[in-house]
Length: 124
Figure 1: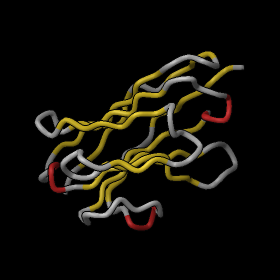
Figure 2: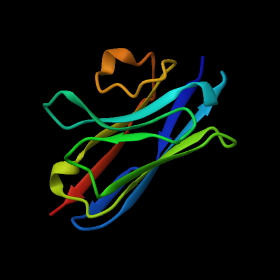
Figure 3: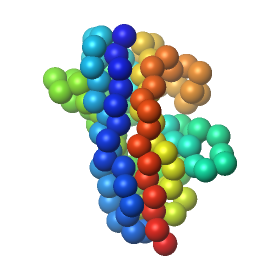
Figure 4: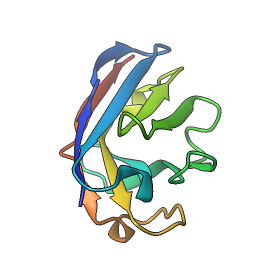
């Protein structure tokens, strides 16, 4: 199966933008549905956005619709999360996750492969 490594996190001011990347190695990347989850301090890990194996379908959490864009490049075995208009509420550790099913699921136990996470801090 694939292994996942996230990058691109950091400190950004409120209203700013940041792009995260999740690079895969091993496995057949194009066969995986990919998602981003995030975990704020002291809170559960929440679904942010998911993308189908082909990139043709996406599903966003209401809290990020219109601000975040997820994409994937199967040739580079990488998914991206472009984040705009960041708010302090977006502060969290962002994890990418992979599942072999076709559906974009919003529950973390549907995903079998996880990256270690990259922290995003939005200062107000």
